[in-house]
Length: 386
Image 1: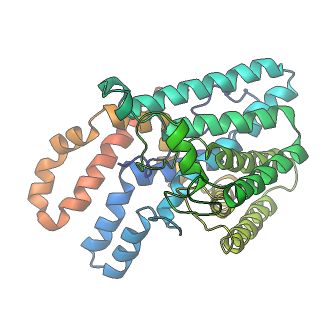
Image 2: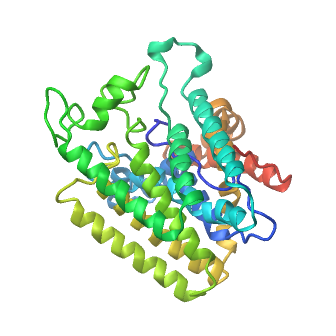
């Protein structure tokens, strides 16, 4: 699994900012987080393989095109995985940071909590990028998915701690507009301003000169230094959504409808902005942030309505088990050979089933082993937190 396809784990399940006993825990957030993780722990292989097995070639083609990242400008479904996690990370801020402030916890204590979280996530990110392989300073990648999550959460957390809702809106909009202005008007030496290519955009230039070690894209890094700013804006969008979810009114179906409407508006704004600042996951452009944030709002609205309002929870339980321990499975799959266990358990079944069934059974077996591992932890109430 490439670094870009990996989505980070972002939620109260990995933060030290654990909700208090009085804080509600929305099952829809855990389920949506688990649904997102499902695709990177095996779903991306299982679903197209099932489509191929049934001869749904058209659907298989659509799935395969959307289960890989855009090469540069543009958007695929797979491009949503990382920003959706980051959005959900921000959503939990209201249930953790804001509630602690309301209960009188000192801001200095909260500073230490989010700083500790950032340091630990950056370190875990280095581990997943091969820190213990001792490949040498020049070959070590210092940027990472978890590192970007940690830094973006820290920046957004500072705003949430020190500013109210209006201030958070102002910071979110200011960051997005400021990022666009910087990318548009600050010239890159030898290239000029507003050149949005891998070699020409401002973030890549900053990464080449300030980020040590190896870059994921050789001349740029999609989890580099400059992109922590728009990523923080997306976390703030999630934080504002969390405030809305905590509010006593509107309630029930109306709250879900408002989430869907807000998402539709954000999607439209992102598409309009795309004409001047292209939707691009690699650069984390402002239009990409607004567009992906809108899609995240729509998905959360659907999950919130189905699970927390309508009460249809039975179908969501498998995703909740994943979503309650996202950091465990994300880091664990770098160090535990779930594939080895899956092959040991299901090799005979795959042989008996025959070659046409092997791709689907391989992906399904991997998911079963990973889910069983997470279910054991769930039953024992063991949750890895950063």
